[in-house]
Image (cartoon, rainbow, N blue to C red):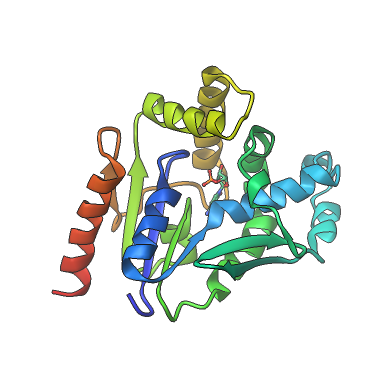
Length: 227
Ligand code: DC
């Protein structure tokens, strides 16, 4: 995997990050969940009462984001995201953040700020990056592009179970509404919408376990990189 890039894009809650993380252990490379970067910005905007400027004054909003620091740091075997020096991982997947993040990710200035950071990450060990525009915009020359999808029911149930395990107070219909809303916004925004690139391999994991997906991708990597 040295120096190689695997882009994993796809619909919301299709297990992109879990899959990317397992693959990164397998291939001994770095995993970057780009969605966590958009979520970190959303968290900062929410916590600093800046939501009202999303539509009314993007310039002011961007000036408030100018000085923030967003860094991945190695903690043990993991890369964790720090916002202004603080470990914010546990706050990123709340429904409050999920409900705002697609609106924030549609702002072109925020996208270009994050795409720049994503391209600057050291790729010498190899990178598996998951998101919505990794194969189409961030790394159009990626060595392998995967696009994950699954039925809305299966995605919502997986996400709901995850949130309940973390002690969140949500209903299945809250989760379905959030996933449908994000898919719609991610696919219809003007700047880098979610698309299936011509050279991406489509994987529908509705009926696939994570180990079946891992096996499938390991075979694809083996034949593409090493044969
Ligand atoms: O992968 P996720 O659900 O954590 O992503 C959160 C939101 O961020 C999602 O609604 C779309 C947006 N996103 C994006 O626009 N581009 C990316 N590369 C990653 C995420």
